[in-house]
Image (cartoon, rainbow, N blue to C red):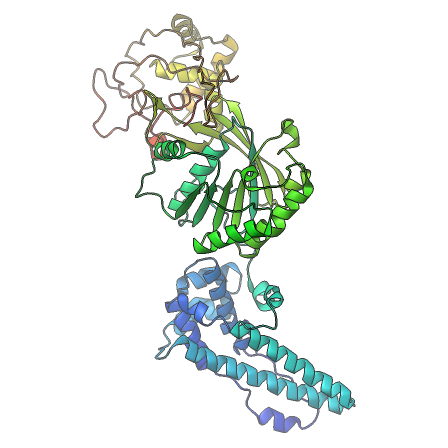
Length: 581
C-alpha cells in the first residue's frame, strides 16, 4: 500500500508484532493541517513538527508544501496547495486535490499547538517502537552488549537534539546552522520567483557597478521604490510589495525629494520602504558595523537591503582584499544567512572593462555583478559580468525617460524601461525606423510608395537614401503600431522643416546628480515643431475624441497600444533630454 509508512518487523515473534497497532493519530494530523490551511500563521505555531512526524505520507506532503508557502509568503488555502503540489507532479497523492478540501473541512475546536503535541507524541512513540525493533533485530543477529548500548546512546542523542531544536535551547548557538534534511529535500528550489526586475532572487546578493555619469542611484532608487510599492520594473509583472531598507550615504535630501517626485512618488505612496539617510552605522567591514546593519534589517523586517554607495560604508582600503573579505564575513554573510537580499552600489574603476574599482575580491562575495553604462540618448546598458547561479536574463538595454520644464523635473515622468528593437532603431538618425517616424509625425500618408516618399523626404529635408526607402515603405504598410493620428489619403501633407540637430546640454561644474551628461555621442534628434491638432484616419479638420490619450510632451494623440502599455509620451518626445533628476 502506498498510503502508509512501512514498519519493519523483527525476524522472530512476528505474529505478536503484527497484532500490535502502530502509534499514530491521523485525526490530529488532519486537525493540524486544517488549522494551517485556514490560518497561515498556524504554520509558525506548529513549526516544531517535522514532516516525518506525520504518519500518513499524504499529510507529510501537505505539511512540506504548507511550510514552503509560509516561507515564501504564499497562500496556504487548498487551492494554492493543489496548484503547488500539481507542479511537483504529486497531485495523485492527494486524490487529485480532493483530499486537500477534505482535510481543510476538518472541524478544529482546540488550538493548533494542542493537536501538534499529539502528533509529536505519537511520532516519538513510533521512534521508540522502531528502536525496540532495532534492538531485537540486533540481538537476534548476535550483537554484543556494547553494540546495544551504542544503539541506545545514538537514539538518546538524536531525541535530545530534536527536543533542543523544538524548544530553541540547543547545547550551543553553533548548532543553529545545522540543516534540517526534511526541509532541505522538501523544498522546491527550482520554483524561484525572482525579485522585481529579474536581476536577482530572494536572499541573493548583487553589486550594481557604474561610473558617476551612469545614474546608479537614480536607477536603484526607482527600483527600490517600485519594489516596495508592488509596481513592475524593467518589463517584469507586478508582484506583492517587498519590504525594502535603503541605507544612503551618497544623496542629499533635496536630490532625493526631487527624484522621488519625478518617479511619481509622494508621502502616501512610499509602500514598504524604510529609507535611512546618512545613518550612523559603523563601518560594514567590521564586526560592529555588521551588527548595526543586521539590527537595522531585523528591526525593519527587511527582505531587501540597498547600500548606496558601498565605499561610504567601509573603513579599509578598496584595493585590499581583506576589506572585502571583512565586508562579507561581518555584513553580507549574516544577511544571507537570514535570507535577506542585498544590493550594493559601487563605482567603476578607471578601466571600465575591468569592472568595479579596487580589489578583484569584490566580485567573489556576491551572486551577481551588474554593470550599468550610459550609451547616450537616454540609453543604458545593463550587463551581468559575474554570476554564481546564472539565473534570469544576463543583459538588458534600458531606456531612461525624464523630462524637465523650467528647471523642475516633471512629476511621474522619470522611469527606466526595457528598450525594444523598435525603440532603439527609431532613435538612430537615418535608419528606416527613424525615417518612418519622421514621416508619421509629418502626417505623410502610409500608403505612399518609394518614389513619392523620396520626393516628400527631399521637400521636408529628411535625409533618406533611396536604398532605405523600400524598407520604410514596408514598415509603414505592414506594422500594426502606426500612430492613430495619421491623416486620410486625401489629406495633404504638412510642410515641416527638417529635424534640427540635438542641442548642447550644458551642465554646471557643481552638478551632483548622476545621469546628467553633456555632449554624449549618439544623442537623438529633438522633437519636430508642434503640429496642428492631429487628425484620426479618415477624418479631416476634426479634433481627437475626448477620451483619446495624448502625449504629455507634444500634446498629440498616442496610439492606443502604446497608451495601454503605460506610456504617456511618444518615443522621441521622451528621450530628447539627456539630463536626469
